[in-house]
Amino acid sequence: MDSSNLTTLSEEETSGSEDQHQHQQQQQPGSAFASIPIRPPTPSSLQKYVPLDWSAYFDREDDIRIKDTENVFHVYMAGTEGPVVFCLHGGGYSGLSFALAASIIKEKARVVAMDMRGHGKSSAENELDLSIETMCDDVVAVVKEMYGDSPPAIVLVGHSMGGSVAVHVAAKKSLPSLAGLIVVDVVEGTAMASLIHMQKILSSRMQHFSSIEKAIEWSIKGGSLRNVDSARVSIPATLKYDDSKKCYTHRARLVETEQYWRGWYEGLSEKYLSCTAPKLLLLAGTDRLDRALTIGQMQGKFQMVVVRHTGHAIQEDVPEEFATLVLNFISRNRIGPHGVEIPGLRRPFQPQP
Image (cartoon, rainbow, N blue to C red; front, side, top):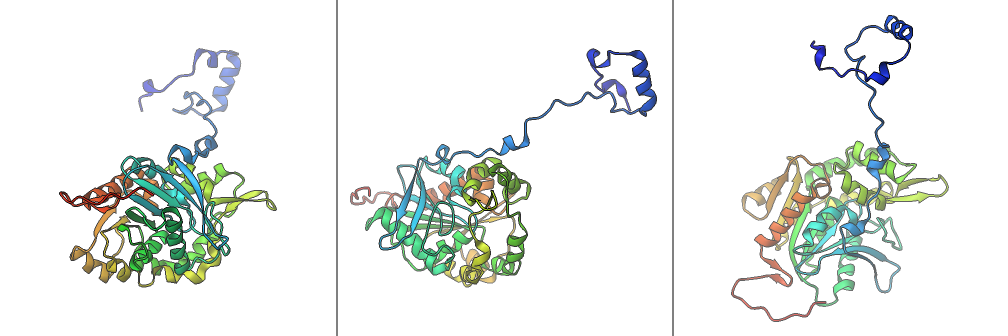
């Protein structure tokens, strides 16, 4: 090994008693690394995980109160023109899961990201009722409260649990202005097979955090998220402070909602294929398509894109690529603020809600 390329100690570090230096040489065995200086101290690792504010990505936030109920759903909004990309997050996430992507999508479309029941800043009469029927009703009620009887064209985007909700809403034709459906990393066969492991996964994850920074660090080092900046925005909204234990815990009580899990995914493939709106399925890696989806894809009933080098939360891990896929989908299907725009066909003027 050529020692000429190794860094030597500075003059100040080698100054001192010659006897002491010789004594140290006698005490320490010779090593090629003995002459490498001590590295300067690095900033605290927690500095890397300091939370980021949502306002750097969304333009505004609001609480949507549902009439004749105690339900209040928190939404984040961005953009002023184009169709509405209405985003539904997965179980245990929040609307801020779409923050980084929203900052790009808002240049050409409007974005609404909703905190689902029992998640984020939303509050409901029964936060443990995560039945597919209840969550679908929540989404429809929020759209109704926001836009009244003249909603703009809506592209429903759903990740994981939110993807199931989006499919059911679309299949029921509950939104007359639905112009597109994008499902993110959820397939019936794989989801149903994973349910038997879900309780173990949820119960074995870290439950308590001394600080928000520690929770963000855990999400990255544990592998649930791969994009540090996205985690710094989204993770704080997935936590709540437990005064009795003096620490942060998970906001969503998913372990207590097991009775509803099967209903999220059972029959999902057939419902997805039954939706008449243009459809895009985004998968992380090579997920398995069941027979119905395989045949549907071969028949051209939906577009599928496999996003490489990402985890389950595609919209968080690769927000730029995710935003590009969403905008390309809108452009390819010619979805304007009031629906599909056919060149040469003038549409009657509709006032903005």
